[in-house]
Amino acid sequence: MSTQNPSVISRLDRIMTTIGRWLSWFAASLIVYMLVHISTEIVLRAFFDTSTFVLEEFVGYALGAMIFMALAATHTEDRLIRVKLLRNAISRRGQAIADVIANVAALGACTLLFGALFNIFTRNWRFGITSSSFSETPLWIPQIFIIAGLGFYILRLLVNILVYAEKSITAENS
Image (tube, rainbow, N blue to C red; front, side, top):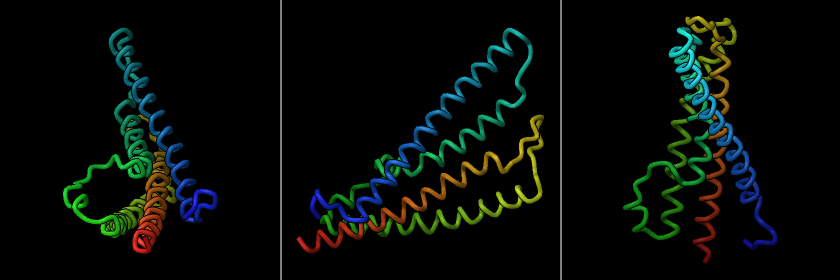
C-alpha cells in the first residue's frame, strides 16, 4: 500500500475519522451547553428565587447525545478502556485478527441496541409522545441524536473491520 495511491478502505477510514471528529466537536459543544445551563440555573435560584424548571431533563438529554456522538471518535482514537496485556503479547497479524473479532462483537451488540432504540424512537415519533415534565419535550428530538451517534458508530465499526482485515492481509504478505 503506497502513500501516493491509498486504498479505498484507507480513504473511507479517513472520511469516517473526519466525520467522527466533527461529531466529537458537537459533543464538546454539549458540554459547554451543560455548563452554561447549570450556571444559569445556579444564578436564577440563588439571586432570583426562580428556575428554568428543565435543568435535569435537558442536561440528561445533552449527556446522552454527548456520549453517543463522541463514541466513534473515542473508539477511533483508541481512548476506550481496553485490556492490552494479551494483545501486546501476540504478533501484528494476531492483533489485527483480535481487533476484527472485538469489532465484530461490538458491532453485534451495537446493532441490537440500535434496533431497540430505533423502535422506541419510531414509537415516540409516531404517537407524538412527550416528556412528562414541565417542558413536554417531544421525546424523539433528544433520541434522534442518540440514534444518529449510535448509527455512525456502527458504520465506524464496519470500516474498522475492513481496516483491520486489510492490516491482517498486508501483515500476512510481508
